[in-house]
Amino acid sequence: MEFCEYCGNLLNEDGRCPWDGCPHNAILDAMAEAKAADEKKDKSEDKT
Ligand SMILES: [Zn+2]
Image (cartoon, rainbow, N blue to C red; front, side, top):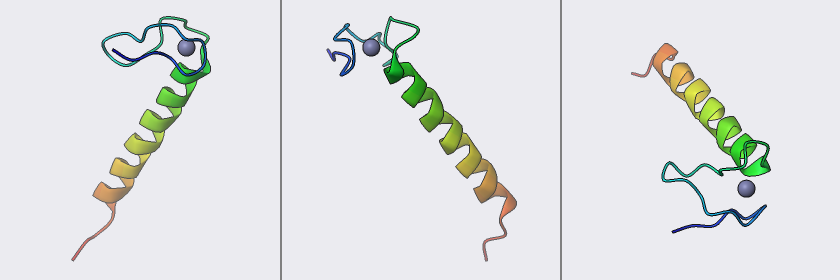
């Protein structure tokens, strides 16, 4: 079990905070977006 580092709520099973407005969720979203952008970039790059 993990607790949110911002509000102390018990995190959901998917790792998100039950409080929708929590910065924890905003960071998760930003990281997921950055990861998705990275993967997109990797695919478009020609690796030899
Ligand atoms: Zn939180």
